Length: 227
Image (cartoon, rainbow, N blue to C red; front, side, top):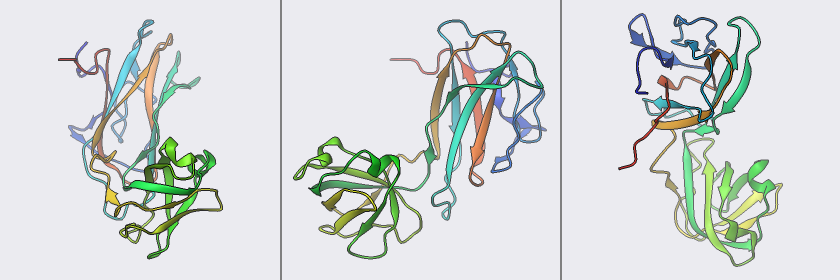
């Protein structure tokens, strides 16, 4: 199954893509609504399921700090009711900073990332939040990377040797090198949500904190070829 006009969950409205923002309205009809969202009638996907391929076509706004987006795939046997979630993307973030080769002086714990905690630095006024950290940092002396979501332009983490502290958390580390903006941001980008359904209709529901630009969401049973 290739991408085609009958397998679009989010796309054109009146012949053009429209911006996706915090007021994005979920589809309740096969015809596209003013946000470009459509219901696709499948009857069922089969046991192997399908992939919803999400294409974020634009870079995040320079001031879109801490803005997060999630995309949920829902199904139903009726257009006007009974919609239930069958799959959901991870949180898509736009401004991520990678702190490489940090050395734990107090071991980090899972709650430092899952709560998440603010990660302060001894230089500047950094207040980014911890998204993830390497398992090695759970042990004193362990060396690993910390991924941080920047909250504003001050969250540069630009000084090697700084003490990094998970505020109201547990972990403390010495920063290895100056932080670098993650080269492969979630936006722009292509993301895949796999799902299966025995219902008649499927749709995508986008929850965005702000305008994330123009977005395609397309259905296929072969998201990518292996070559």
